[in-house]
Length: 306
Length: 253
Picture 1 (tube, chains in turn green, red):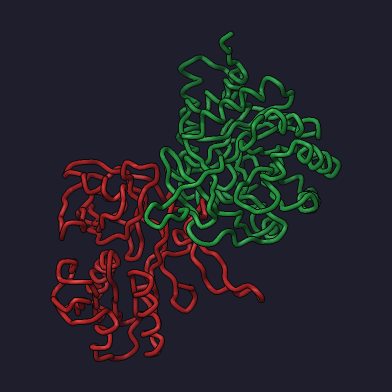
Picture 2: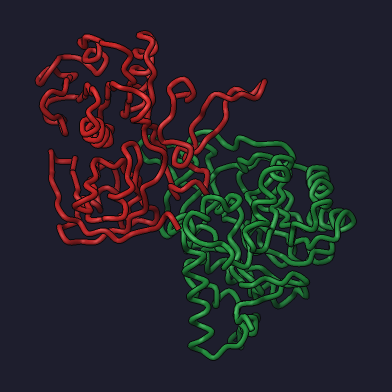
């Protein structure tokens, strides 16, 4: 038996390692570096109903142990994706997660209606209620539990595809939108998207990124993500996909102990394109070294101090 | 797989002036594939790697060169490297120049653009093509990589022709239809592109943006090109993966 096989609700993945949306495009580029079939899955670049050119000007600022990005959901649109990228993603012999972003309630519904007919090629829809780099939708929806529940319920009625809800950490209490997603009928929550941040060029006294703010990712945000996974794991019945600053197999294990059934690796691929491959190998070795038959036995084994 | 990340040894370090350095790195894999106009991403003790145009490659010797100008913390860290130190290096990345379709070339550049153009010159000369090089600098102290026969201009006039790259280009006696390749600051590339256009010559420029991954997955290093979609002023393309070399007629600088 494959020691890395995990289940996220009804979705079986050959490894807990999924490449996070926005850090692997649709898989073509990283396929030049390793065989992506070792992965549990790939989450597509965040898609919108119409193509988007994304934000103008500088989109990146380096930070301590991480980076800000303000790409702003540049993507070719869902129709192009269905016609030109979906079959390619399916051909990679790994889980196909399609990241769905929108500016409004209607956008999300229209996107899911367009994708539902291709359910045979898709393992799960990841509903992006958390991108901090667009003016409307996404994070502004994901930070309001009532709106999260309303959207998830509506999408639940439109498709049988597993719905994974990717949430924003830019809230006071992460369990509120997470519980709202569960009540709306979500199959899983993905925790966390990037933290809203800003860097300033002290010579020009202007923000480094032209969108003024950006999403902070990288190892610096991992403790925040671990805490949020742990908090949600104690109040949710649905599985959690952990995400935020994973750079190594040990980081994956930490997320799983905190309560994650699977994880998404994002910024690590921007530093080392083969990060997904080396992390996967590290997990195999971890299971061997520790006589673990199946890695999912780690999920939620955290013992908090009394 | 075709691509990989390597650990390269710093073989030699040469300072041209206080802030411009030429590194020779041992990296046989990259040396064997590298094409002029391509770049490498180099670790520098900061979170993100830094991109540098390849300044030369010797397949037989397994060596590549990169030129570094100290502009921030990352390049400052690189300036502290000693011979024998190791760096992580990813490449070769991006699309290089088309060096096959034309018989003669004019290479025009300035700033750190002179490094990738040096590699371009080496390869074109070895291929027996007719190559003219025009480099522009601020002053004598900044003059680097200027080989014998290159046309050199300085803004200050204390070395070579007094003026900028365009002054240098205007001094040339044009024969045939050379292709113009330009790497330098954006205003220089705009100027050189317009100059080439006025002479009816094709021109390709190599763009530079703040980068993260270098391999085309993060979409932070975009630049604009003309869009063929009606009503759309431009489209964002990736400097790292779709470029860094673009046709001057296509890119919006």
